[in-house]
Amino acid sequence: MAEETIFVEGSPCVVLDAVGKRFTVRSSEQSGWVSRNPLKRMARRIVGRQARAVTVQALNLTSLVVERGESIGIIGRNGSGKSTMMKLICGQQKPSAGAVYASSTPIMLGVNAALVPELSGDQNIVLGCLAMGLERAAIEAKFSEIVELSGLEKSIHLPMKGYSSGMSSRLRFAIAAAVEPEILLVDEALNTGDAQFLDRSRMKMDELRANAGCVFIVSHSLETIVDMSTRVLWLDYGDLVMDGDPQEVTAAYRQFTAHLSKGNNVSAQKIKDRAREQLVTAQLMPRVTGRRKEGFTS
Image (cartoon, rainbow, N blue to C red; front, side, top):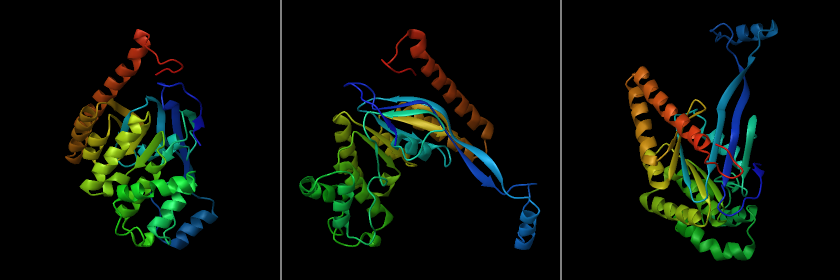
């Protein structure tokens, strides 16, 4: 799990202190070509030409301070490090470098609520809430609210294995939000709902933030990110490229991806470099002016 410490009121919810993550994977690449013939591949293994270990840097050294009441949107291309950052924050993975600090146990949607497909939706509500520490009386008191938030009133008594991926995601979100966690992480689950569900989930996250909590959201839908975030992080190839206002960050990211889609790689790189320069300048400012969070540095 993420390391826990106790913060006084008004202090950060989550702190990433020079956090990095690397994986060691096996690569079959030897000379740039691998035979499709299984007998030849076996022969290569027999003579000792086996797959070699390759280190992949999923997240480069990153430092962040997330305040209470913030809703953090995380965007980037596939493989940029978004899910890795989320797993490090919730404690599902340990960092290779640095440390993650949290004021309470982060709840990641779909991780803490381990549901059973063969059981009905209402049975999974009870199971998921029990797994997250709610008492029976509290579950009964919150049951109707969970069902309403999920929007599954007509299907709540049916086996979950018959649910679509969107229905399952909505139920997981509703269960995770029921425990009113101080730190909630949502990974792609809000992409699979109708307008009414998005409105309900937005209101619920606003409620969580109003109660001195913070929310992290990963989504490929930039509209969802803008609507539900107060601050956006743009990651690319494991680097934090930009950190700031949702409209400004998503606008820069749209320009970046638009140039990439047209094959204008040089122009895209210039957009990314400008964003990185702005980020570095912003990170240096507190050190230059002496404005530091008590107990933390940028």
